[in-house]
Every structure is written in C-alpha cells, then in structure tokens.
Image 1 (tube, one colour):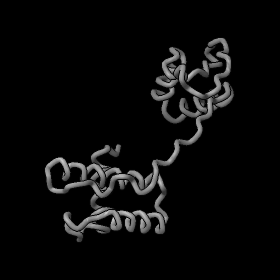
Image 2 (cartoon, one colour):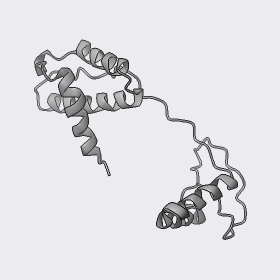
Image 3 (cartoon, helix red, strand yellow):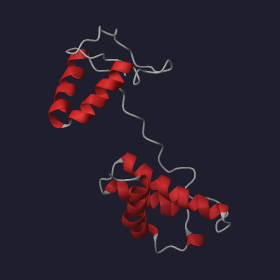
Length: 148
C-alpha cells in the first residue's frame, strides 16, 4: 500500500527535483512553477496529479516561509485550481448485488465488511449530500440494503 509519505517522496524525487531542483530557493518564483505545471500537463500528466505535485511543493515552500528561509510561498496561489470531484452515483440494488457477488468471489472478507457497512447504514449519505437516495428495500440475505 502506498502511503501519503511515499507519494510525497515520489513527487519530490521524480517530478520536483528534476524540474526545479537546480534553482536556488531564493531564486524560485512563480514563473518557474508555471513552467513546471505547463511541462507536466504537456507530457500527459493529469490535472489531479499535477495539482497534488503542486500541493507537495507548496507544503515544502510553506515550511521554508515558516522557517524564515523565504519571504513568501511562490506556489501560492495555486497555478491550477483543484479539479472538481467526479459526480457520485448511488447504486441500484442490482448494481450492489453484482458488486457483492464479485467481492465474494475475489475477496470474501472485504465482501463481509461491505455487507456489514450496508446493513448497519454506516455508509448512508449525510443530510447535506446532494445525491438522490433511492428507497431502502427490505434487507434479506439475497437483497442487501443499498444505503451508503
């Protein structure tokens, strides 16, 4: 499993150091960061990945500001806005059953956990959710509840 720290180190080693590692911290400016973003997007990196790379850089530069190594963080404001989250879809009972059947075949303990979450309503939408909920069918062993 890749941890957040692993991802952070990978962005630093594979993206940030090769792109801007030769620039002195005092000389690093917004135009360098814009260039980094342009290069990443031109080479086919996704907007979410580029945003995460920038967040990693901004975090490091924020530490430099807090330690009085820089006056300002040149990665703020962000060069590209945070990409919007994908629209969520609440499964139909048939979709949930198909998913659970697949899980039981591939990873039975995971399927058991999902059934427990569905059965207890732990994954149900919050009151502020904009998702449209379908009525909860009666829970039976062959038809799991679809609330998440």
